[in-house]
Length: 294
Ligand code: ATP
Image (cartoon, rainbow, N blue to C red; front, side):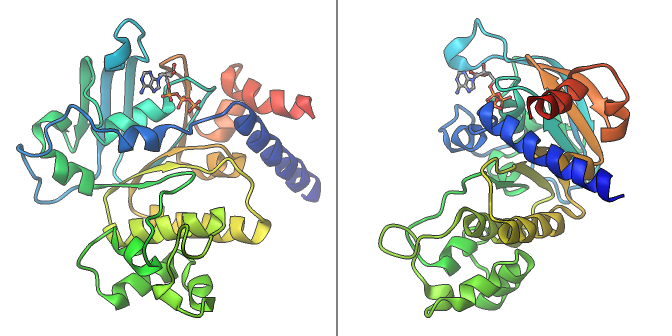
């Protein structure tokens, strides 16, 4: 009904506000950009990837703060192609979990597995080719739009770059620039909106064609048109790929196969939106708190 739709819309906005206010999940890609103490190569490269991911009793503390446990025994399995939304208060460990999936760090205890193989037995460079990421505020290079997209796969042809841009709902805005795909971005080029940057990052990930995705959903508000185009592009990108999404919007959470609620380094709830709303617990409080805060 319209009433329900209205309530959900209001809820979604409040959710975004709450997540913004909590300063949620800004760091995953900072983590991913860090130089890790992980060997870059050596180890196995799997011939084919199904995309099954398992965290088995994972315990982790950052190397700089060994006395502060950040993940305290995480047990979580993602089936191939499953979309799992992670929610939880700031500092719960959501970004850290995502960073472990790309093997930015190794757990102190427990294991992270891809298709049953422990990540530490796999070739890191190869592994990272299997993991696509889209950040809240994607990093673009001071080069052409085409080269920014091609960063997803260096040998892609112009036709492949354009096809990826179309899938990412980026072709249209790119074509409107006088220089099209040759348009320079960054300080000496065009300034792109947040939604446009995200669609470039999505095109990059489309070109990379990884089996696994780590998405850090934008908390900052995009205009309605951009919001819709980004959402549609993300849905296309996620299709058939195992996806871990750090979610800030109720609509995303409701579209996920499963929601995992984290608090203080532990998974405290897991289920779909309506199941979790039917339980006493953090999830309902997170949703209701924002609703009441209006
Ligand atoms: P947010 O939603 O605010 O991003 P989060 O749930 O993603 O939070 P994490 O970023 O994973 O949480 O952080 C979990 C804990 O680890 C926090 O206490 C944080 O301060 C700490 N932490 C994060 N990154 C580092 C780091 N590089 N070195 C040391 N401690 C860190």
